Image (cartoon, helix red, strand yellow):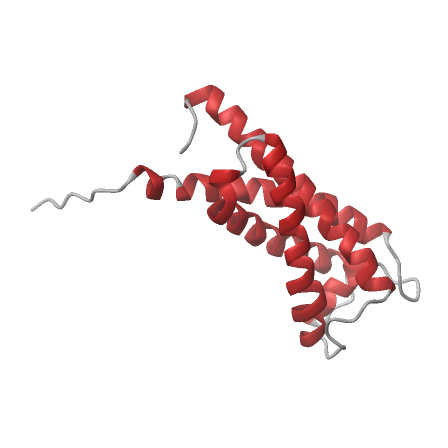
Length: 160
């Protein structure tokens, strides 16, 4: 017995946007990771080692691995939630920067400090630098998503 599954074009494109988002998240994550490796807003400590603190480490490589995993997840979510609106460059940049600001608010101001036993929603030199890093992430992820969408549209026609 064979079962046929009907999938609407809108639903079928979700895995495509998720894959494009994963790639975009990695691009944004690399740019943000460079920022965090160079930025030392507190006691000459690179922000990327602060990310390693999420798992109780101070190793920069651990920080990079954790960061890129989070960036990939964030990119997938961007693709799934906003991918249909982010296939052209201008909307992708605006959505990407806004998305980076949302992740800064939720991740850097709330979740990460709460996990690490620090005050949440506090403005200081670390969160200020983190805002810049998250905006870089969003900008690069948006540009990367729109670029992948353009290349794929040229190859096979636009995704819906």
